[in-house]
Image 1: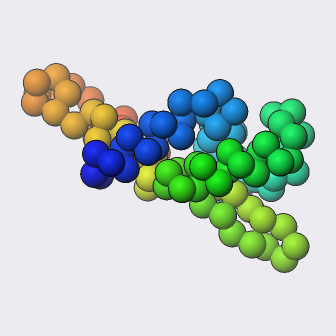
Image 2: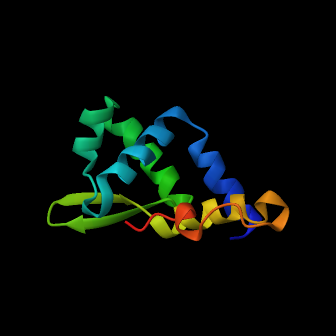
Image 3: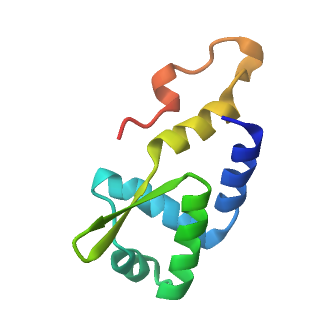
Length: 107
């Protein structure tokens, strides 16, 4: 992952609403969540939620798919894992300190 993309992803998560949205999508798993469910669960107005979802998508942390009349949002696990990998690369001064599976979500 390039440094520029890392900064964009971290900046997107450095907002209370976006962090809550992203965490809710991670919990939602591969099924994803609709904006209506997210807005109700997080008590965020629809217009505000739309802005935050767009920012998370631009940062490569969220995907969107149309299913009939609904939009389904999901955490982009590959993007999340790339960010985690970048942040933990060369930790412990190059010594193995975490198992590979501890760093990745297999959702």
